[in-house]
Image (cartoon, rainbow, N blue to C red; front, side, top):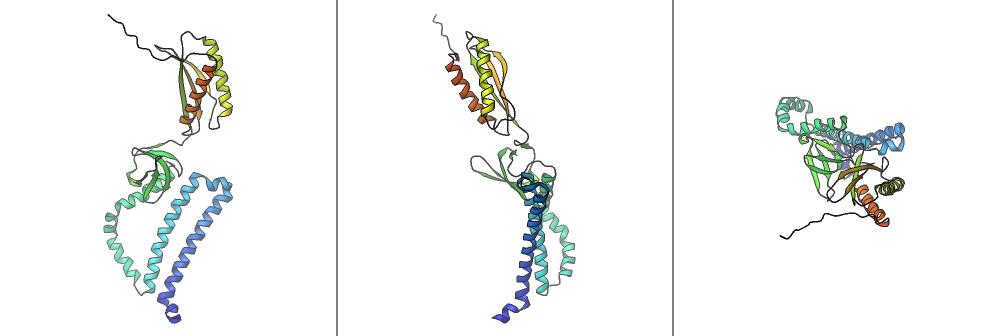
Length: 265
């Protein structure tokens, strides 16, 4: 049994596999150490660096697999030089057969270089909206807020809308009666906006009363807005609407609603 294990055709492939795995492990640790030493823990945990680590790991993994196959074939006496020469002749055929895969690989590199999106971003790609779960050499994986996953080949990615860049805008409109004291309404809304600016954690700017937006049929329309962190605008709008309603009710300011008047002939 020991002699079989010590046979080079058994032992050498095992050594090769272990060595390649160690190289992959050490490479991964070195990349993380470099990022950590340059930018600290924040640099290591940033979405950009996670994306780069994922792409580099995939690239090194596939490269080591190819090297491992060639080395193991050498152990079993296969003339890899002639094999590689014959592969040179067949490379054109392989390139045609795997042209989509090559396109995916190149597209994946450009996605990272051009910084179109990172892991953790919320994007809309080809009409599908979700969070970027992974960016591989062949495809990008998205997860919708409803739980579905979408796998998009990198070369098929067209227009990209990145919802996680910079900021979002929350906009709320509210109507008051034409009989309301507008100076009083202005003061109530301004005080409320000042309070909400201090209370809401996901803002990137103050909550402001933009003024009267419209003189509608049923009432006077005020506009309130606030810049928020990416994709937090809907949460902010719900909170602002609720607080506006409570504040106007407390101060006995009527919020009108459309009325239909029917005339009998």
